[in-house]
Length: 222
Ligand SMILES: [Zn+2]
Image 1 (spheres, rainbow, N blue to C red):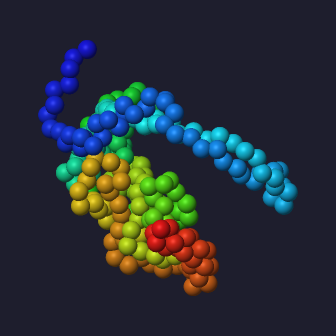
Image 2: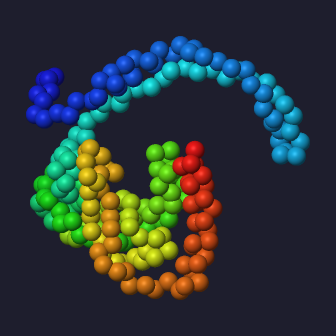
């Protein structure tokens, strides 16, 4: 096995240095708690439990492997895809090998993709992982970047959820300081979408999103 030769590096902040070492599975603290429990919400009775705190966090160091160039591209605000030299299929997000049976896992070549595409489909997210809760309700969009045979997922920003329309043109944008993470890119509408939703449907969406918006506002107030 050979050693990595570092070509370029952004060192992890030293504050993370001891992060992984905390995970010794020791009991750092505990508390005895009471909570009301039962099989029916109108027939709850108190029960006592012991809850313990065990530090168990890790620094997860992993390689992006054969698709590393996609993430290296993000650092330079370039969108990279791959192209099969046999059949010409283009993949963005990239595939290291072609998906066609006839191409027998042919290794693909890297190409730079244009920063424009078409909105294929989307979902209005009313819930998400901890990191995204403050951004709710956000739009998770699938975009076919011009020239690609696949869709890439990302957030669609700068538009109210009820105004989104499929098949409209979008621009691929980068956050100010990319970190080599899929969240470095997002989409924005390229011009005004052609509206096809009736006003009544839009009003219904707005109504459904209201409690989520209130919940997020409340959460932000702390
Ligand atoms: Zn192919």
